[in-house]
Image (cartoon, rainbow, N blue to C red):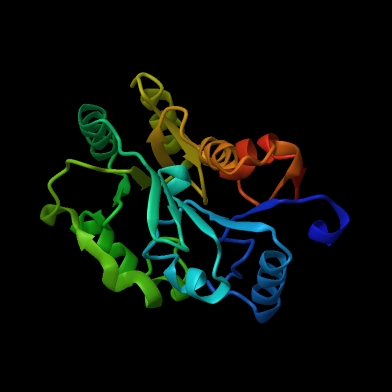
Length: 239
């Protein structure tokens, strides 16, 4: 496999569509493979767009060395629980993005390091099955989604937003390009992760590798989404 065939010292693992199946489950085979890598001395890192709260059941199952969540906005040493890196959006930029999403009548979530918040209409649509989220996701995490009315918009780490059609998605990207300090990473369907400029999985991966004294030529990544591209370009080995 990728570990035995190459001199890999650190392995970055995406969750959705990679470690997890379509029902949000992690297989026994994946758990065994990840633990085997760790036991062989490979540093294992979950690298995901998810927050830690909706990744915790995977963390508990595979016991990685590090967790990199919200596309690199948080890096935590899971062995010591130390936060190595944490980043939030500029509040003025966040307000501009919120205004843009609302003007286009887009569903959106505000992802913080302490929870995920969304408009009541988004919650209603999610619970009614009107948005493209799996039943497994809603069964596990629906209770953690909170109405945005209860949040003071001070420290958002990222937005997740979903356009209702291709035309709205294109208009959102066009207008978002006029807001400095931000960029949108396409996710599922017409969905986007809205993040601080120059924040992606590769940034936190590079920072972690430098901290651990590991060269990119000894790093590997496994992923399947557009938000994994920068990470796969950074490491020497990618699947």
